[in-house]
Length: 132
Image (cartoon, rainbow, N blue to C red):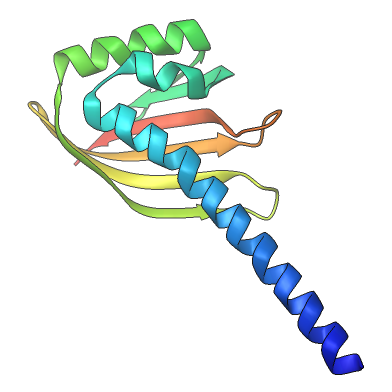
């Protein structure tokens, strides 16, 4: 009897874990596609109400609309030729993050994206581009 209960609990736990991993990769999949396309408009629905945006160590806090405009200017000045996430993870508090490599006309950047849990789906809290 104990063995059946243990197996049932293990199966439920594994199911919940796989759903959490799928949700994380789903959110980052859309963000990856938007950055790969160089589209601030595609990225806008995933921006939180306040976004910390950084370029080469210069970080500022923007509203979602201001962040969209700043990202549009960056993508216009430095259109992407390639983008991939190299690593994804999450904290114990549920904050998800990803590190990627952005290749554009002006060079290669290391990209850090942090998403915080929101009302239903995670929203972007931080995007940082650091030229390599």
